[in-house]
Length: 491
Ligand SMILES: Cc1cc2nc3c(=O)[nH]c(=O)nc-3n(C[C@H](O)[C@H](O)[C@H](O)COP(=O)(O)OP(=O)(O)OC[C@H]3O[C@@H](n4cnc5c(N)ncnc54)[C@H](O)[C@@H]3O)c2cc1C
Image (tube, rainbow, N blue to C red; front, top):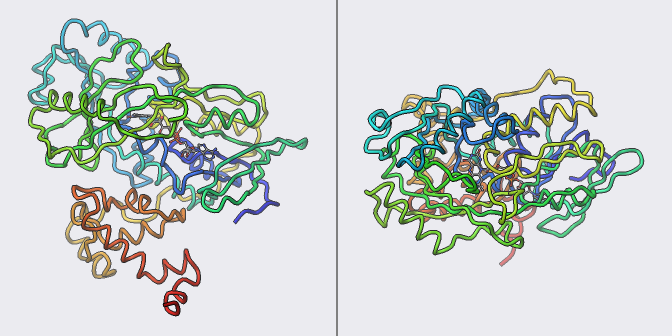
């Protein structure tokens, strides 16, 4: 798998939404690109642990990268998601002043929005807000129609798989452990295979550090500075029963030094509602500790009850957390701007402190990185670049009946439901197993197909998926050569 003689033109460390957006952007050009990721699949860091909101750009100081790249990234998403077949819903968002104390904060957001050229903003009184979201409380709201929702891991996987289809190499389960730059200007990267402990090596002319919560330790490997302070956000996921109750995004007005945007309700593209996120700095050793805690979950439960009084105890189906890679320490709070720069080490680009709105900004960050790399590489557009991702345009369950019947006749695996909660067919699970990246985990199947993500959390479909993995000869042989023969002959 590792070709020690090969010198890549560009290597990206970290396969979150940003690293994968950079990879997909570079896959448009006639250069050799690779991504190195320490986890067994893409998007297992912060990119699968957030609210999944495409922000409009009202929350960030004028002139900052967060402001410019979120407005630009948001505007790029319709075309990108259409090519990648990723569902996106323009729900709009109401940021609500509950009483007069919130008005100066709301006015500031409105002014920032104007300076950042956020499209379509409106100030609405309570009656106008209630036409958008019945029953909503508050004296004044700022309406931003470009705010939207998306599956953050769905987008990350789609970017990576399309980049792979266009020739980018992915080295999963490989943690970068050291980097050297030699006299001829080539970077030598050492990695450790997470499963076997084996050491591998990759060479490249340019290097992009997109390692999220660990971007500071990757930078230090080349003597470049910067410190990340992890700040945890916890969530509850609510049952789909409540889907219709929330038509738009409802946010409070954040305080000036709040490390997040405040606890809120967020509908998801899959029909669940999220409550969260909290914002609490955690010790350095817990950067990738994604625990949830009883005191915070109690706060979320109380907030949820206040915001959505019809919530019952059985509506809480799961909880999770994500850690923001902050550049501001706990005693300062608030937010620093994104760091996106070519460092003093020529050809080494560092992306650091990409907290919210990093998901929204990912395609715009990728375009900026491409511009920086163009100073080092000759970027000639490929003639055979395929922008559209292969596969169905939407989930099988969302197709019109006529289309479903046609597909089931052509492939009987479309006629068998494996996950009853989420209506996932055997063919969709099979496609997830045989993904272009070669990722091989149950979580990878879950994120790609939505099997195991419904109300019963895999109670029904997990044994069926395990049986598919066990019985599917092609799958066994592909990943464990010789296993079929061993199972046949061994007692
Ligand atoms: C609670 C919360 C809510 C948020 N809500 C939103 C939102 O609604 N909208 C929005 O726009 N943004 C939101 N964000 C921000 C958004 O999630 C991030 O900006 C984005 O996911 C960052 O992506 P990334 O690719 O930079 O980092 P990551 O997704 O963390 O990816 C970095 C990758 O690098 C890998 N890595 C690290 N070290 C190494 C190494 N040594 N070798 C190999 N690989 C390595 C990691 O395993 C990881 O996969 C939120 C963030 C949080 C925490």
